[in-house]
Length: 271
Image 1 (cartoon, helix red, strand yellow):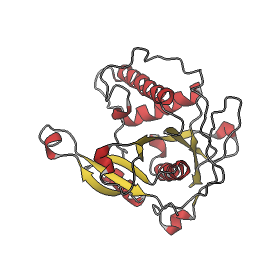
Image 2: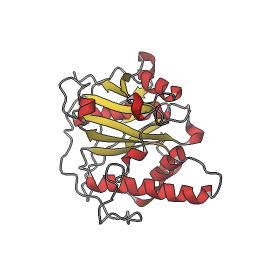
Image 3: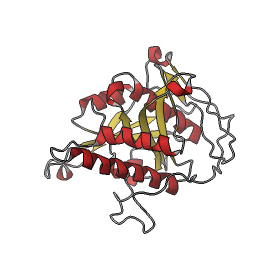
Image 4: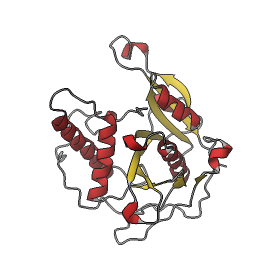
């Protein structure tokens, strides 16, 4: 099953055809982004969402997010969720980890070509990395997060990144009309899992971590888009508690040959 979501729309030039003048595809990624000024309240209770059955909830644990008081003050969360042999945390903004994230997403979303496929893959991976850098450098730390899934082990040398997902605070009016008493929501996108680790609950744990982050940030709704004909992805999201609320208009899909997308949302239990 290829998990499909609005991934290319995350690139900075998707909504603005002309990138900012200072934007460089091959930006250095060694400098820290900025200080984490808005600390998460450690006393904020975690709430359970109704996305997973009771039998599955026994296997998914939600440790209280911890903040590292490092010198750079980035406010890095600890593990948001752990289960099925995987643990999910916020991505560390370091060169090797960001390149690993870009590689995972590039492998998941690259469309193979008959000629020069390796060359075009390298360009695509560079674009993915550039998009990640742009979001990190232009988003407040409490409005965008890249979450990574890795093998659950205490031995750091044996840990391996196997999945990734982006979570962004949005306020699209076309989406807000489906939400009750909300002026913003968390948008889930770019979910990707390495091929060898698919169908092993990695995506389910990533989605659960998105819920935990929504509760920590105080957002009631999670929203995502999927292709209507991607039954595997739709089943994954439905099992995670998402429901379909709308779809792309006919004139933007079937009339021009585009795959139709559906809008799915989940309401978290804030009590």
